[in-house]
Image (cartoon, rainbow over all chains, first blue to last red; front, top):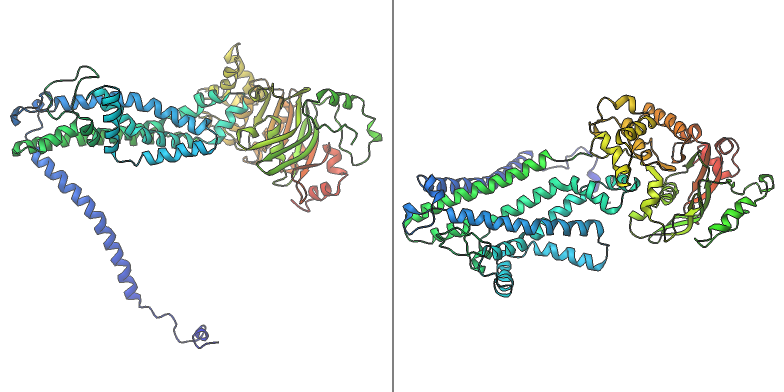
Length: 298
Length: 290
């Protein structure tokens, strides 16, 4: 037996690390962690402050009621705001029913075989596909093949494809969170599969599905790349009145103003960013509220 | 065993004859399973597999009409699986395969022509953990009735079911309150009320008191004695005292190295607990294992 192992139980100390040095190491990592957090928060605050300062004076009623213009003092986001709402209406109309039905099928009906696993893996992958790829797909399929043109509807279809995986994944999680005991209770009373889904699984999963849909909508509202790809306009001095009319949306309007030379347009862009941020924060707040408020306890 | 072993699920006719023509019990060998004349539910050579795992092996048992039969045995003996085989609840899990048959009033519920949805209306079930729907008491009771096309007065049904489950006096002041607002014992009685609201013939109870305190347990046991006047009750329990207190008949199941989920002994509760024929039954009820 070596000398080292014999020291246990003897009076000489075998634990030698300095307590002070260990404390310094512990503190060091606390400080490092705090700095990392601050880096993100401070950057965000600086950006926000910058945007707010730039936008001062531009966020007035005229800004909301005017179309874009060559003269910054006459320019507004009317077309972009309306275009965003119009496009999102059709996007959600398409994506939510298809997404929810897909989720119900995958969770409740599909058997556990290679085909459903293949579908599941692909849905998860689709959620990670860069949005520009959806734009290229939309350009080819909706704009060209289906001859929708560079319209609101083509934009909606592209966006619906983009958020479909998000809605499916969120809905499936919400369905999976319904305890099996609820299904068993329903079946044991002589309810059929559909009656069980319709009266129990869906209502209990609804808050989760709604939350997922809202977060997906928030994602779609902020997207720019796919819409530029399918050719949404950057200068729209009119309101789209028909699903096949041409249109623009908030992020594209902001992008347009930022790329102009005059600094007034940059300030306009800042004002547009404020509007976009308020919309997104509002949507996210509603999602959080719904998640808390409608959470079912079993 | 006197009864003709049935391998085919559709050989119902011969089963009935076999029961009718069986010799008097005195002629049975001492360790032969007891035959019940005219049972409400008859399980014949029933085996069940989860994938490759066999959970129940060749069980034959007749559950007497309007009596309480307790199924006891240590954990993993297949008693819950057998119970869920009686109303085809096992099928909700994928990969389940069965052999043999289960006759409800002489009809094989595993026949191709039988829809499990209809079977489950006629054979109600109460679960281990109370599982009321997160809905009002009224809606909890009416759900099963509505999906099964109940036509008569709904208020009457709610009252009858709640009275039948000895819950009416405690909740009739507010039938709109959520079923989840009730105590554990009340929730379980609500689940019983919900089950009897669709007028089943048989009630399956899967350890209905294991999540309840002793007082709530006693209430459920009293209720079971009342319900036995109208329903055939099969209760799975690992509480032997409960089986002795509440049941008319007791079945003892066991898994060993050779095969899992075998019926070891079945008989009137008083006989089985005082004078078990199988030494394994005796070992179990005297607390030497399990």
